[in-house]
Amino acid sequence: MEVQGKVKMVGDTQTFGSNGFRKREIVVTTEEQYPQHIMVEFVQDKTDLLDSYKPGQNVKISINLRGREWVNPQGETKYFNSIQGWRIENLEGSSPSGAGMPPVPPADQFEPASNFDDDDHDDLPF
Image 1: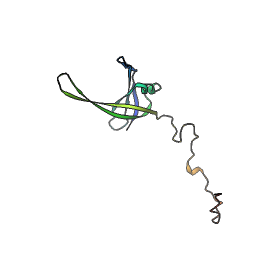
Image 2: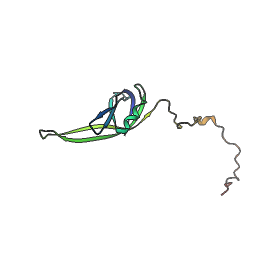
Image 3: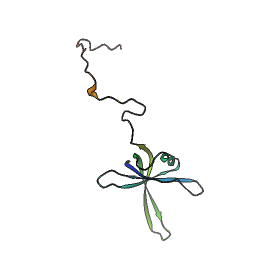
Image 4: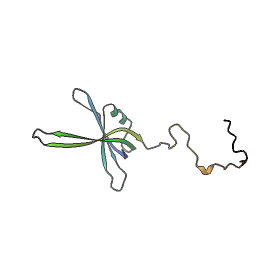
């Protein structure tokens, strides 16, 4: 699944417990009729993926939905959901032809070939 929108906030990396569990949150505002502010968390080594992102950038985040069950001390069962990111892409300044590749000119800038010979259709060397 993916979430696409404009970065609203990038949080600091938080470390929890003696095992060093790390978490970092980013909020993305969707660009639709009723914009939504979606908080996505990145955990462990994925927290470093957010280092180069700033508010205002358009991004696409690949996500997984996570759910867990917890029983409180009174014996009541509670359910929690989270949105966990595992990849983020900057949508600004990206070329559809790929990174490092020259842009592809529009098809109408090419001249059609005019030197076709109907008898010369099987000139492959193999």
